[in-house]
Structure formats: structure tokens, C-alpha cells
Length: 613
Image (tube, rainbow, N blue to C red):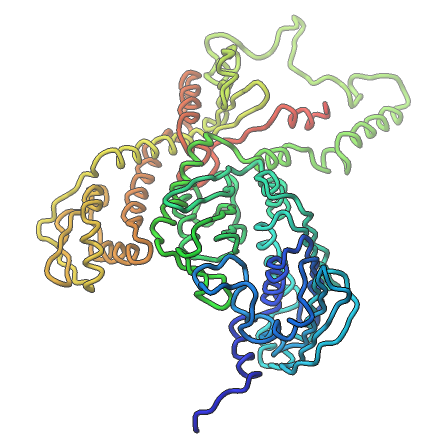
């Protein structure tokens, strides 16, 4: 077959295969265009999951009538200067509108602030109709109908309406976080309305927008991030370790205001929370990276969701260091969701109080009293006092004195006023030989003694690892590992750092590494696999986290076996000492496995449980 020039329609359809994957991709491109036009309000309407209808209306600057034909032509844009490295807008490729028009029925109606009237242009399967007059307010309305009607094969890969609507909602939320001063509305016959009112561009306004997207409990369970290094600035909010999700869908990352899904950033977040979260839980974060556009490539893929950094090690180190420092500076904090769970566990159910709680319970007492047909009878009254076992001498049936347990002695001891003012308060009792009950001035704290002490021992072991070189064991015969030349060179460049962690290696010819020492803590280990994993990680991220993670895992195992076990009775002084160490140890709100070490219940919550509030 001879070489020939493809038609413009076919070229656009090929481009649409990369840019327009599903209805959510259309919404993303159109909303980004609206934001680039300076919109303060963006309204999205969908039907059939977006396959039947997508309408995006904004109040931005609009498109002049004479530029409408250019707007739907390939590689025509108003957002890119002569320098491809200086990209300061969300869109810049000039592919979205012609790609959509090649696979759907597209109409654009727009009016500028200076225009006396609006104009409209339509495209159907790549065929462009002439521009015609129209009636519209200032701004632009883009309507897409019958998506993929021109490429029916693509329709077979679409999911159900609910799945497509959910993907569209996720796109809107992801964009909305980066633009808190813009009002977003998403509605349609196939979904409930999503409305995100405008806040402002201040940190407080940003946090209010995060609460709209991530839930009202996120702000009080998050920590602010603000750090910088060598021209790269990182801001945002991250959740405390005890506030997690089952998946990473609520991890949002932005580079110069652009929503991205970058594996380097995702890996940095995992590394920052490495030893404070369970393996099946994920932190909730919103991170904003600001850097010189020339140092990041956003033109990696037509969808513009992937980026490539000129110095990935710098970016990763900044994210990991900033999050860990923020978690350390925040001190010990418990998630409010733990208190909510405790409230739900303590709250009487329908079996105890009928169907309405204490109020219905009170009414049932009144009914029982009226049904008795007589006056007050202590033996039959629902309000009779509890039988406390008092005898004729009115002496209590329980004993006091030297034979009391440590629990009772702790509960009887008057707490020092200073201890009550501490974060975890003063120990009052130990229940079930594992849980310490403490009191502050305005709350009740329950501590899992084993989980708490496990974290304390683990942090001490980690500090020992990083404060001095890790002890190494000499191999009887050096392990010779054949590697590609570039991997061997990377390992040799990090040899000094690796030696501090107990791994002694050196170049052995052009494509090999000789390992002479391994960390004593690892015992017998697969040296070849360890070195190859390190080489792969250095190639990807320019770090040696693999070795660090293995050492930390050993330290965590040692901490688990060396900490206070469940079932051990503690004296009041021991309980208070444990509480004070927790307050002074970063990350002590969770154990090594990511479980919470304590739960705090405010006095106001307790009073609500008893109907006092």
C-alpha cells in the first residue's frame, strides 16, 4: 500500500484516542478551558453518564466570533507563547476541541465581555458548520452530544452510567481543590447534584474547599505543610497517621496548579508514612508543588496527567522530609473518628431504649408507673435504686485497704494538677490488664499499653540506627554480583551512604559489584536480590529506601517482641511514665502496624451520652 496523507478527520480521531478516553476526559478538558478563560463559575450538566450529553457553561472571557473557527482547528491555542518550556496554563496543546468534535456532536456558543451578541459553531463527526449568530450571556457554553457516535467501537469499552458519572465527579473534585475561588456545580438526570461553593485563595479558604471535597472531618484531622528547597515549594495538608482510608483515591497532587497522577509523588507519600500506617491503609493528602515551569515537563502525555521532573530526587526528598517533619512537629494527636466510634459503641441501642434513645426510655418508665395502678413501690418501680449490697450496718460490701489492686489504687489517687494539664493526662486505672484509663481536665483517654510501648521502643531503635553507623558483619567470601554498567555505577556513587547502613560494596570490574559486608540486623539475607532492588530504586528515585525499609522492618519486629505485653499489671507511676514518653515521642499516636495507640473522648461527648447536654 502506498504512503498517503491521512484526512484531517482521521487525524483528529487518532488524537481523540489519546486525549478523549471517556466522558470524564471530555469534562476535564472543557473545565480546564473554562478556568484558563478566567471563569469564576463553572456549571456541568451530564446525561447518560456523559455519553448522551455533556454541557459545560462558564462566565469566563469568552471566544471572539472571528476566532471560533480557529478554536476547533488542530494545534490552535491562545495559551502558549513561543517557549514550550514556559507553560503557565492548564491547556496548551490545542487538541481537545477538534478531538471531541471528531467523535461527537459538538457545539460552542460564546460571547465576550465587549461583544454585542454571541456566536455559535458546530462540529458533527469532524464536519464543521459555518459560524452563526446566537443568544447567550457573557462566557462560553460547550455542548457535547452522542459521544463516540463516530467511533462506535470505543463505546464497547465504556462502563455503566454510574461508573462514568463517578469518574466525572472525581475529575471535578480534583480540579476544584486547586481553584477554591471558583464555584463548581455538577448536575444531571443520572446523578445527584454536586455543588462546591466558592471560598477564596487564602489558606483558610483552601482548607474549606478541602473540607467540601474530603469531608468535614478532614480539617481537624490534618496538618498544614509549608516547606521549600532549592526553588521548589511544597504546601498543602496531610492527615495525621490515625486518620486513613482504605484506598489512595483521596490523595491529591498538583504541580503549578495542575492536577497530576505521578508515581514519584505517590511513592514519596508512601515513604513519608512508611512506618506509621498499616500496609492496607492510605493517608489523605492534598499537596501543591510550585516550581519553575522550565524544571518540569508536563508534555509527557496528551492527557497532561503525567509530569517529569528535572530533579526527581529533590522533589521526592522534599515531600518525604516535609511530611515527616510536620508529623513530628504536630506532636501526639488522636483522630476524631476514634472518638466518634467510641461514642457509637457506648450509645445505647434500640434493644435498651426502644427506638429513640433516652427520651423514649423515660416515656416507657412513665407508662410502667401508670400501669402499676398504685403509688411508688421500690420493689416494682423502674426507678428503684441499684442493689449495692449494703447490709443493715449500711457498710459497703466491697473492701478497701492494702489488698486493693493497682487499678483501684490508681483510681483513688488524686492526680497532680500538672498531670491533668498534659496531653494524655494522669493515669487513673488499668482495665483488662492492657488498657490504661487516663483523665485530663476535659477528656477521658484510653491507651493500649502494648501498642504504645511498641512505638516507643521502635522509635528508640530507629534513632539508634540513624545516630551511628549500623553494625555490619563481614562475609567470609565476597558476593560478586553482575549488573549492567549503569546500575553498578549508581551503586558505587552511593557506596559511602550504604556503608553507614552496614552494606559494604565496591566496584568489581566494568559490570559487577563486590559485596563484602551486610547489616548484622538482617542476618542471613539474599544479598543478590537486595543489591538488585537497591539498583532499581536508585534508578527510579535516586534513593536507597529499600535498605532503610528492611532495617526498619527488623527494628519494628524487635520492638514488637520487646515491648510491654498485654496482661502485665502496671503501677500508677509506670502508667504515668508511659504516658509522658508517648507525649515526647513523634508518631506515638499509632503503633508500628498503624493501629491507634489511644482514643480520646471529650467530656462534652460523655455528657451527651448521659443526656446532660
